[in-house]
Image (cartoon, rainbow, N blue to C red; front, side, top):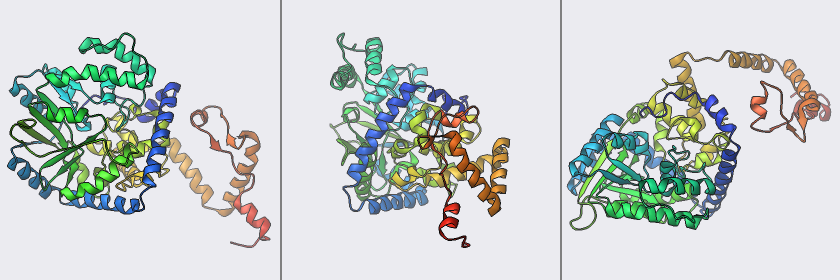
Length: 482
């Protein structure tokens, strides 16, 4: 990845800033809880969800183990149906390829389907430097672009904005770059969607070049797949004369038949729907129908580094559903910007350090941006063991940078000393029970003085139990040894 996010402070400092934004926390709590409930409902309808999850993980693991062969198969299939495949080792190379392709058409603007790969390489900025305007057509991405903002969520990039904020952005910014928002625009969702539709329609009808990503790429047929909810993708993929798709090499699946698994897993895990409203597939060029010039840019940009790590490579199974973000207690309180990456939340904490390395302060800190509660693994539709990856990457950070925390070392040393002797542990449990009278409040720990307030400012923790299990056992078992 390139430098947009580099230079940010480490996650703890960035998170502290975001925690001070009460409106952000309200927006996130409301949005993520709604998505969680919808997901749980539609997943619960399937008796074979566990088997689907296993199948998705198995297909992805097999593909990654044979990625070189499937990439060559995909290139041959795309070429056979009239497309052109380009290989990009990094962001610089990918941006150069896309800029050159757009320049060759003589056009000075493109429309885009939401694509995390193009955000990752900062394609919009590269196009702007070349004098080419790139217009985001996904509603949430449009909000982010008009607001001169950065995405905060994988699925809902503008999740940190509420309706009133969106209305203000539309009224202030739309007229500067196209059809203005109506003067009487309200914050009703239908009115906001109507304003976005009117603003984008002229861009769809005018644009000769489109840039897309892909949710999946089928090696067997050379087919690309985009799933979305608004129809903007369908417009981008069919109306322009030239289509350029930037696709991470990990997006491959071997066969068309494999889509049957992922097109059940993805919508249920992401939007809480049984199926996506729009599933677009395209294979090469068809005379007189759709784009007549089709290019695929296969992007590495650190992915082969992740693939070389036997533990870390499972992060490349990710299908970008965002389920892990919606259940993560850390993400819900900090939002996505604190992660300093286009990939926020639990998956970003394990994917970003592998793609970018652990040179910057923010990348070194990301594996620690988790409570290791395990909720992310429970909801992952392709069974990525994110908690295990976080611990693995923490070890890597320490080994690569000798990055040690003296306070944490002291705390762990104290814990080791206490847990190393049953009598010391029993004494600590008695002290904890007595402390309940001081710090307990309605069953939780209230706000503590600094520096302990760093914990209680952002969360409530259960107060210590009135009686430890050890004491209960001794009282009820007459001191029997265990």
